Length: 160
Image (cartoon, rainbow, N blue to C red; front, side, top):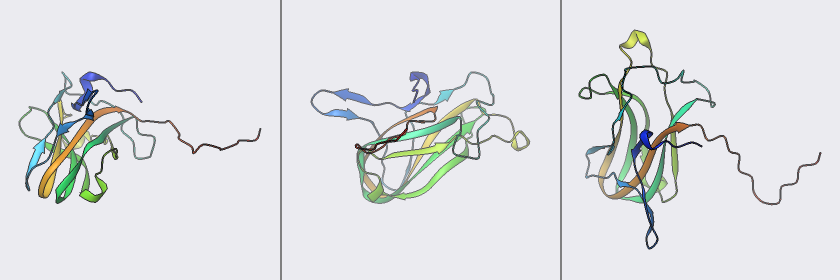
């Protein structure tokens, strides 16, 4: 996995006393936006996108503070040509807060942008659509390459 500082939507901080913390992204029945909007400088297609599991680019979220108090959160990827009018390109749908615990990771593939649907975006940002009265919830979010690392439980033996 490669994470570029310029491609981080919501940044985390580390403290030796409290550990890793992310950006607070909770509200009472409201939508919050990422703390950073990524400016691609020129409107462009940033990747071919993909319709299978080997997509070139993904937006990933790491939950650093569990969501509490509400019912759900819908995580959205948005694009804009002018940093004012936004179009939703992809979304997770409402995820119950019981699934949004510390350490949970979410991932959305960067979708293919259809040129017939309008110009390519110059700006990218994230929305957090809070269902119910969420009172806590923090994330680190970034645009990066697919994490192709395979994790196996200890003790696996492969015969050659």
